[in-house]
Image: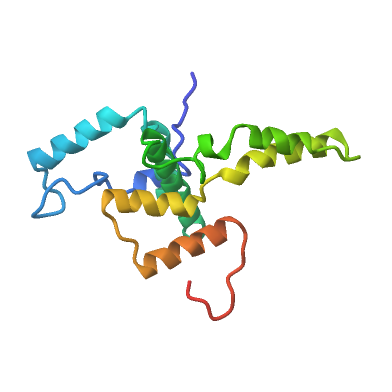
Amino acid sequence: MKSRSAYSIDRKVLDLVVLPPAPLGARWQHEIDRVPFTRLVNAVFHNYEALDFGNLSWAYWHALCATPHIASVHFGAAIEMLLRQYAAMKPDRFPQGIIATARFGSGFPVRLRGGCKTGNPEEKKNALRGNIGGLNRVHQRDTMEAILKDIGIVLGPDESQAWKRRNDAAHGIAMEDGRRA
């Protein structure tokens, strides 16, 4: 006979407070009003695949269970995943490139790649060719601001600072002396 335990991040998942992903009532925390509940269920059902809700839920669960010093990185990763999926659902409103492909010209990267005639080893040339495609990529911060504006959320100075600090921490940038956390 064999017994297996479910993956529970050292049983931390059992300590989580069970709350819905959004308020479901206007009067008190555990209220479930038919209208917001129906709207939430329909939105999750309709967008489940497009938002990759299964992986998004997994990322959120890990963030909830993470130790405090790393939780912001996990929450940030979940937010970035959600933003990326939301932008992909509406490419006409959130383009991937700074300059439209038609104006940028499909020949531009090819011409630039053709100019890679150096004496460097092939792997260095391939690395350079791979980076060329990123020249026209929209910065993640700009996409986030556009999406937040689209859904009517204003990022205040404290939230903006927290997001920047989370980004710095995720990329190993040390906090300067005297800077707010």
